[in-house]
Image 1 (tube, each protein chain N blue to C red):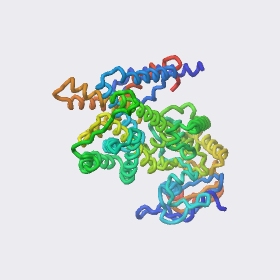
Image 2: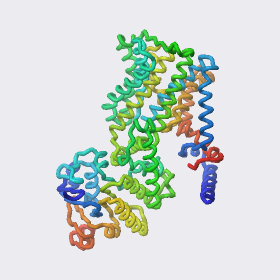
Image 3: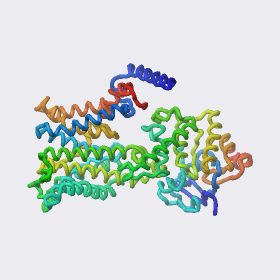
Image 4: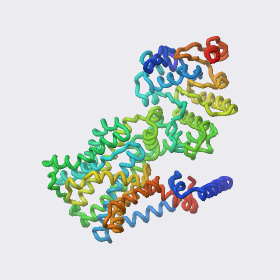
Length: 255
Length: 355
C-alpha cells in the first residue's frame, strides 16, 4: 500500500519544449504538499497531468493504487481528485451558490429518470447539498454573496469560491493552483489557516502550487521544488528553503 | 428580520438610482433573477390558467382551438430545444427533421392500425433513437460546424420524405385519422387540443425539473466550460448525446400531435423555415429559461399573422423588423422582459419570497 498519489518519472513535451522532465512525487493520505518553483517550471503542467488535461508521454501517475494516466477526466474527478484553476474555471453567468453546488455533481446521485419523475431522494439530496454549500460558504466568509452572480465579484473572492466548489465534493486529494493570487497579505495567512482546517476536517490531502512563500511554508507538511521540469529538492519546508539549488533557482539566475 | 428588511430596501433604492442613470437599452440588458411570486399568487395563477385552458376548447370555434393547439405543439418543441441549445449550449438548426420523424411515426403507425397512444409513443421513441445516433458523430463538432451539420439535416428532410415514398407516400402526402376514439364525446379539434395540453403540461413539468438542480447545473457547465465540467466529474459526451436525443424526442412528440391536428401532411410541411422558426422561438422566448418556450410559441404563432395584417404587402419584412428590434432591445427574450417589468412588483406583493 503506497501513498495516496504517486507520480513517477513523468515526461511531458509540447513539440520541442520539455515541460516535465521526469519528476517523481508522492502525496500521502491527508498530507499537505507544497509545489513551488519559478515561473515555467512545470507546476501547472504537472497539475494538468494529474487531472487528465494533459497526457504525459512517459511515466505513471497512480491514485489510491490505481493508474490514472489515460483515464477520462470525469472519471479522474469521480475517483476523488478535486482542483481549482490558476485562471479560474467558474461559470460566470451563475450565482456563487450555483457554482459551489455544481461542484457536488459527482458526489451526488440523481439521473435523468429520477429527476424527471421527481423521486423523493432527488429533492432530499438537493436540500442536503444546498445546506452543505451554504455552510461551506459561511466558513469561507462568502455567506453574504451566495446569491450574487460570480461575474461581478473580485478575483480574490473568486479564488475562494473555487475552493468551496472543489471542497464540497469531499475530495481525497485537492489540487490547489495559486489560491493566494489576488489576495492582500492578511487574507493570505487567513486563507492558509482555513485551507488547512477544511482539509483536515475532511481528511483531504492537498497538493498546493503557490508563489506566496509565507503561505507555502506555513501550510505545507512537505515542499517539492520544480525547476525546468525537474524535481530539484524535496522535504521539510525549512530545510528546502535553505537548499542552495533552490535559492539559486529563485534568485541566482534572475540576477 | 428587521435588519434584513432594511438592507433589502436599501439595496432596492440603490438599484432604482442606478436605473435612472441607465439608458433604456442598458436597463433591458441587465441580467435578472427569475421571478419569485409569492406562493398564493403562484397557486392562484396556476389554478386560473388550468381552468381557462380546460374550458377554452369547449366554448371556442374550431379554428381558435387549432391555433391554440399549434401554440402547445410549438411549446413542446421549444422546451426540448431550449434544453439543448439554451442550457446545454449545443446549436441545432435541424429539429424540423425530428419533428417530421415524429409526424410520420404517427401517420405510418396510424395507417398500420395502431391506436393514438401507441403512435404518439412511437413519435417520442423513434426520434430519440435517431437523435442519439445522429448525435454520436455530430456532437464531436462545436458551434458553427454543429450548426451546419444540423442545418443540412433540416434541408434534406423534405427530400428524404419524398425518397422514402413506400413508407411516406412521398409528395402525394399522407392522411392521418386524428379523430377521438368512440368512447370520447369530443370533436376532432377538441380531442387533439386536450392531448396537446396534457403532453405540453408533462413536458413543461419534466423540463423544469431537468433544468434545475444537479442535472441543470451540469448542462450549464457543459455549455460554459467543457473542461471545467469534466473536472467536476460531468461526462460531457454522455450529457451532450442524451440532451440531443431528449430534445429530438420532444420535437418528435410535437410532430406527432401536428400530424394528428392537420390530418394530412406532406414534405412541404417540414421545410427549413420550420427549423428557423423553432430557433426564433427559443431566442425570442428567452434562452435557458423554461417559461420562454411558452412565450416564444405564442410569438411564432401569432406575431407573423399580426405583422401581415399591418402590412399585407410585406409580411416577411415586418416580421423581420420585429425580430431585429428584439435582438437589440430584448436580449434575454420575453422572459427577460417580464422579469424587468414585473420583478419589482412581484417582490413587493404580500408574502413575497426573497430572491
